[in-house]
Figure 1 (cartoon, rainbow, N blue to C red):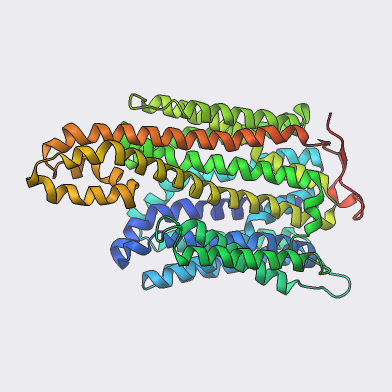
Figure 2 (figure 1 turned 90 degrees about the horizontal axis):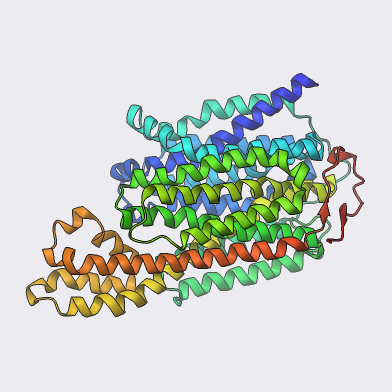
Length: 531
């Protein structure tokens, strides 16, 4: 039994690490892929396609794990991921690669919650705290080593090996998991909620596409974005109606009546809004204000990831002394402090100062992230373990997409207002012989402020422009960007504070010495009223 457990843990660690690494490694290879295939305007879809399919399938994977067993679902997800990785490596153009990435996302979405679900099966509540902290740290580790691994593969081999490397590693993970994980035999007929699966996929994909494309590829008021939001609303409304009637719902509506389920996932959602806001906008600040390279700006985020790794591991031990509710509250307060520090960033901020702010954020995130899943698993019986575990991952992914969209829209709106008031009058007073250079920037003020920042704050671009741009325009652009980013971080802080405010309403969730499977499948969550 000990050997099987060791084999299984090895398989889980390998599978989670190579799945988590995939995103950061592929990001490193994107410029090379675009040079070979072209299609620069389609590059973002390499990430978007994966994100859409993986997010939509997470809740379905959790439910299927409860219905037909962990082993079948996990090995199926691994197989899809491995086959899709091979297809990505064989792709002959950008369109093929995007479709294969979407298929790969299905496999990744199945794999994402499975490790945490299996940890919930194997260990007692107190043991789970340690292991989930370790597995949470693996995600952080992938962000640190992923770009280096991806760069080495691209430089030494070929970008296709970014995908081919998944094959031997994935097969090794399958071998360990197949040998270490027990098979499950369902008793009686298994009822699949096909209508729920369909409406959830359509609703989630439509919502995420609207959030991803709105304000970027299409105006928020365009028929395309309004149509996607409408389709998402209709589909998700139908999903809720279906889930309230079927025998085996994908995401039981009655779970939302449970205070612990709703509050924990709300905290995860709000935390993700803030977390992705920091990850997305701090590197932009470093590149455009401090003036570091793209590579150097990435190193500013390294302290965040390293601190998050350490805090995730230590948090698994501390929660037994602090308690779930208190640790989540402490972590969210530290995150709020980190965002408060980010609002002080200005044109004089150094790389060292920004990195120190990242340490504070990473500490807060590391204390919270693994505990959310642990608390959900402790509050529900084994019959719902897959559903509640996958819900934690699902709402955090939705929160991340929502955060990037809302905070990005805030930045663009504030930038447009500031640049219109500060920059356009200066551009209008420039000599007529500069009119050809001025016109594109005036248009960007209204349509794409981020492109204007990227152009006017790039030293290589400035060399091609008249000196007056460096003397008069750049200071205005920098001050406008700093003000806009400060607004972004203030709104990010508001979301995190909301997470802090709802934490006290969590009940007292006790970590037990019993394995989840020993709980009665019909019992209510083990929660006492908050004090």
